[in-house]
Image (cartoon, rainbow, N blue to C red; front, side, top):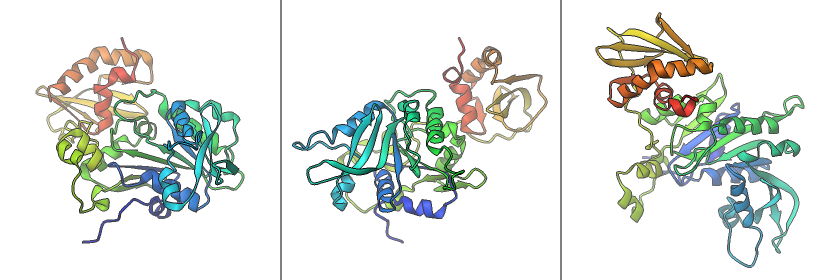
Length: 357
């Protein structure tokens, strides 16, 4: 048996899939995703933009460098500074925007920034700043924690920032901007997966424990870091023993999307089922079938009397009143299956997605 590596190294993904523009990496806690990524940026001399969720996150990071007479450092560079003798600190330059600088022995920044730090909530602010020298946009903790409140437009804000940074770099003969998204496996139902249309791919990876998927036609790379690959024969900590068997432990120590329910996500043989309606959402058509009080959502096409285009507000409401409310009840009673998670989420969280009374 090959000895487990100690930490994840993003260099392997970047070198194995050099044509990708987007890298989505998630795992259990602790394999070193952020550490590895920032180390690569410095060692390979790549300018980068480090993206957090809110302006308060940026303020907290920058508070690390305000005092040199006390030990207070929550910068992502803290462990790297310790291990490599660097002294890289974030310095706030505008509301929601900071630069990462090398600092001298007195803790004072010098030279040009090696990278930048900004927030999703500062998407409109960064348009006045030229950070086009950045080769990478790194979205840290792209999957929000359970207790975090997030904006419904977070996915759009991410791509808005990406396009702002990308600008005309290809026309100027430069390589495309790389987007690297890093997170712990909290929930598959997150805005980044949704906007990139990879939610169902990530669910399949979780269920089958597939480590990597590269969508060659879209140049999108997904990596579910295998927890065993970075496992070590060490005594379990107290929290691992105490929390064993819980959803939190599955997320923290196994890298599963433990907070999501995939039990209704399965392929149903449609023999004997008859179609009752269909709906179009995000340019994909889903058909609802019924047989003896059992229901199934499928991509298998059929002629139906009722079809709903969910890009239209009135049809969103009509679909809710005529079908969705009842279908949710059938799902709750384990009488409905879905070919993929997006179909399940559309029905079960319909009111979170669409504005219906």
